[in-house]
Amino acid sequence: MIQGTGSNVGKSLLVAGLCRAARLRGLRVLPFKPQNMSNNAAVTAEGGEIGRAQALQALACGVEPSVDMNPVLLKPQTDVGAQIVVQGKVFASARARDYGALKPRLTGAVLESFARLKSRADLVIVEGAGSPAEVNLRKNDIANMGFARAAAVPVVLAGDIDRGGVIAQIIGTQAVLDPEDAAMIRGFLVNRFRGDPRLFDDGYDLIARRTGWRGFGVVPWFAGAARLPAEDALDLAPSGSGPVKIACLCLSRIANFDDLDPLKIEPAIRLEMIRPGQPLPGDAALAIIPGTKSTRGDLAFLRAQGWDVDLLAHHRRGGRILGLCGGYQMLGRSVADPEGLEGEPGETPGLGLLEVETVMAPDKRLTRVEALHAASGLKVSGYEIHIGRTQGPDRARPFAYLGGEPEGAVSADGLTTGSYLHGLFAEDAFRAAYLASLGAQAGGLGYSAGVEAVLDELAAHLEAHLDVEGLLALAD
Image 1 (cartoon, rainbow, N blue to C red):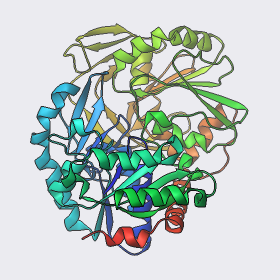
Image 2: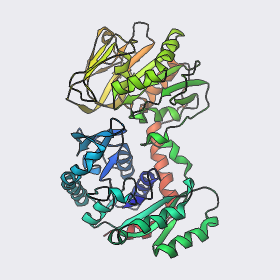
Image 3: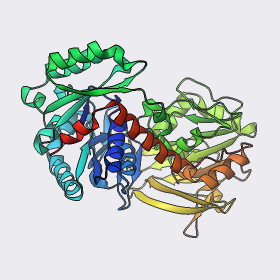
Image 4: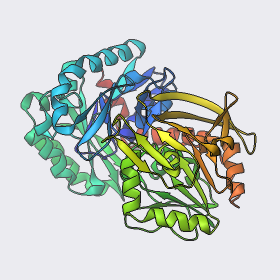
């Protein structure tokens, strides 16, 4: 089990790389994360949802993702509450202060999923969540040491030197842990070193002496990480310097933003992430309203930034707008949530750029899909993960056809499009055709093949800088 000294220290990437390294050694390997918190979810073949990082780790293992790889997924809906997904299905919604009381009811599902994975594999590599040093959350823990001790899984602690203070991160973690928890840790590693790793030899030795833990190596910064799907919204960043600008709004509850990843590899594109307080650039060819975990809440957020005014001005200039999932719902005339599924019951006026209306309903659509793009006839592969049904006149001009039925909507002037399909840009031929309609020539790069190549590079990177043999030998 790889645990971290904090959130976003690179645990997900380390597990993905170790999974690919183990696979290349001929092992049947599977990933596991007991509890994840993310609005960037993937849909599994059995129709459940898991964290995007576990889907990437499954790809590194060469297997289909399964709900057992991430049995508890927390999807934040507000600053103080989240939807709880258990083994792929919605279990409940709870405020953060009430979630601790629910954890004992989730332990059985976590251990059940882990047992199923163990029965299928030579090796399971587990990813922790946050940090075991958050000892205020230790009671009923299922994400870090609570799981490690219940399942008797040895732990390696990863620190992030790029954020500074890695010596204190690792030694301090040991200092605050219960001795029985600390006994689960078999060693440490240092991640994201920039420059010559030998310059850290004295610090590395100090950590080993003070903790008594074995060091498994120092991992230099891996630049290829930017070409892999990100799970944390903190990782959203501008990319590219091409002549055609695409601007995406960073909503407060942005979800499934891996939709943007294939655009980042295109040399003709400059992808700009528009942060709160920033205006939508006037020279953007395309504005994207991405998915969200709270459509009405993020409509209010969007208006508070003045982005509604920017979008209308963009539209008047002849700019294109694409709304995906929750973004599609926002583009309509109204969004109604009579049962209060995403917050307080009520109805919110939409942006009015599409002649459609959305009503939230409790049944959640979770499915992988293959569709035909209406304008080009090209295949679009992706997935749906949403509540709500959208109807209206603009549905007569669909974005795509799904099983022969219309999907999405296009405005009468052709400038505004909405679709529930996530992952559509991963299909190389469709992406090239769509970018051509914006005046951008695609680079001819294969997105999926590129991700596979980066995973191989990551495995080689870890093999070169970590004691991978020693890490694998820790497993029972």
